[in-house]
Length: 159
Image (cartoon, rainbow, N blue to C red; front, top):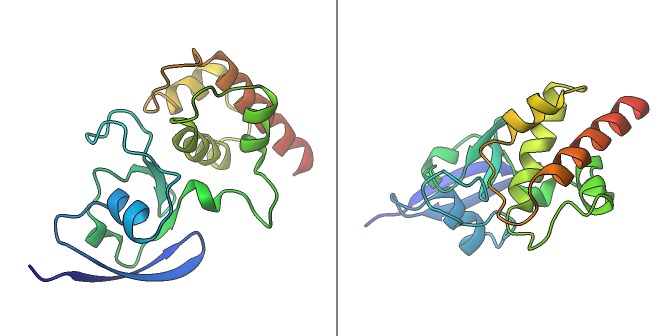
């Protein structure tokens, strides 16, 4: 079976790769490009562990074919920190101890960052709604919500 040549942008850098027609974006990110932050939790788009941004929209990379990345701009958790400095969401997840096993954390970071880019002052309900597609089996979510609220506050104060 012939592979598809894909030209895209990942974390701000131009990237080219070859993918099998049935290969998911998650598979290419992890196995071909060695960007292992996104995790495969369910393979059906239900857990959010594989969340990335595609053209500014949170997307389950386990559901997107790699060929669909052609011409798109993709941000993975590896691209969230800038110039060696953690994004406020990352920093506050650490400060609030809002992770345990960490399997879900990359997807939550991507989704929370996306929310705060759209809404600088979300309510607790809005945060919970936005993160509803990201399942966490360990934390109970309260610390995650507090971390996102703290990140939002920091981002508003430094804007």
